Image (cartoon, rainbow, N blue to C red):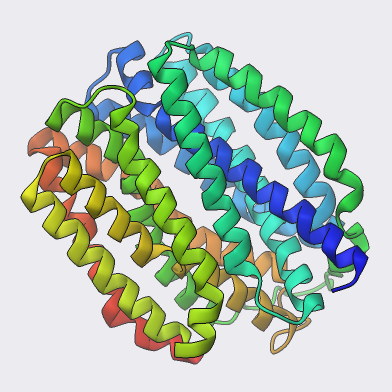
Amino acid sequence: MDLELRRAKLAVTIAFLINGFTAGTFVARIPDFKKILEISNGTLGLSLLFVSIGVFAALKPAGRNAAKFGSQPVILWGTVAIAMTYVLLGLLFNLQWFWFSLFLFGFALATQDVSMNAHAVVVEQRAGRRLMSYFHAMFSVGTLFGGVLGGLFSQWDISPLQQGISCAILYLIALVLIRPLFLPAAVDKHEFEIGNRVKHPFIFWIFGLFGLFAALSEGAAGDWGGVLARDAFGATPFVSTLPYIVFCTAMIIGRFSGDSLAHRFGASHVIAAGGLISGTGLTVGLLVGGIPAVMIAWFLLGIGLSVVIPLMFSAAGTLASTKYSGVIAPSEAVAKVSGVSYFGFVIGPPLIGFIADAIELRWTLLLIAALAYLLVFASKYAKAA
């Protein structure tokens, strides 16, 4: 790998770290948002829906802009937007402001997410070897450290606004340092033909379906693990962050191994094994109950789900730039797979919250185990990639 690619790999790695760190610090404070605003599980679920709506709304314009202008400038502006919206999120004036800031926060996260994945596809292809699971592992490293720091902030009674300002300053400093390291915008600009829109191949919907199952489960692990630990098992503010921290650790382990496992055993077998591990682990952990069992369950859930979305993004980007070159840009392919996948984040939070208001949250989460098992049956379609 030449110097230009090594520099670009470092820049993309830091972008993934920032995105993951933001998600981790945010998730760690979800129980605090609930406490500060004095809202129910159902209202919390509805509130988290606004993050997902923001994510979903950003995917198409982010993919289109990354294709039109190149992924590099979209990454930069997306990072600036994350810094700004994280501060707005910490203000917590009232419930309506919380919803508004969550929407903007989700929009900013998704904008950076799509563009950095598109840039990662270019780096991976130019390097001539699998790198996507590595990049997503670094995202999980970010969520792990973010979760730990967010848990400590919660334990030390540091306000969400103070946390948001601190993170925003850190991100802007990092952005100044890494801006020259990215590949130039011209490397993945896509010229759009004037005329009728070309119908995108169905295979990208299939990839998105796999991601949908994984996103539903990942979202539940992040959004509801802390609430389950605190409300059902009486955990302290810091201990209630541990299931998510354990989940992130498992995601890191799985993703650092993902590229080699997919190469050795094939993507379909890796996805099937992941569905079995995550579904069984979560089911047993919820049935046994208690903080140790929940942490084991969240660890197995993370191991099982770790490689699904990276495999889908990598395959989508590769197919778009090879078999479907001129039909769909890699950034648009990533955005399409993201759009279907991240719909899981749209419907997941309110679904879990509303059901948990009717029955206990602990048993509601068995729905996520059932969705994880669907990966076992759906994985055979991955052979089409």
